[in-house]
Figure 1 (cartoon, rainbow, N blue to C red):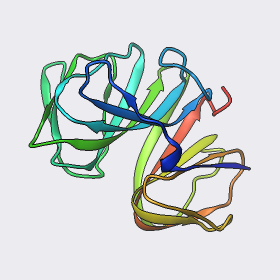
Figure 2 (figure 1 turned 60 degrees about the horizontal axis):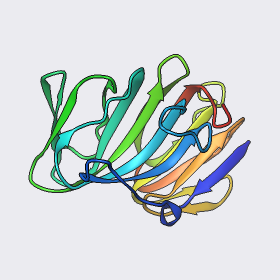
Figure 3 (figure 1 turned 30 degrees about the horizontal axis):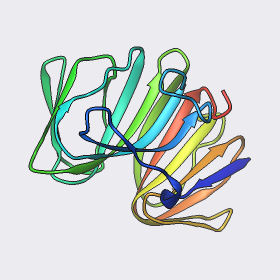
Length: 192
């Protein structure tokens, strides 16, 4: 088993081309992949204003509101309200998507997977949680969205927005004091 702890304070912020916000990449596979080469990518975004989303051909997305009043996403013209924190919303990254904020800036959690190379299941957890076996998810990312967590097997403390990336066999349990996202990846691992 390999566990990599990814601290929130070590993530650089990258401004969006349209000036509407900032993105902080948490992890990607393969590590260091650019936007054209990832199999999967996970990030947090500070959204300052609404507008069109960038299109990602052949990519599936899951977005989860972490803080703020929320937004309405028009995906290929169909409106979807994303206003309840910690409720994942999946949509195709190659759909024409426009965002309207519901009253101010927000922070969202983004998972992107390239079709044919990787898939992801996003689960929001609270309390003590057994982590899925490597046979179910060759790569697993834990991100603390609120509060803190402890990786019980390793005795590692995670603060708000810290993450841990697991590859290979695992028998860890996660004790969450707050809210965490578990992202179970199929297909490509971190090294892919």
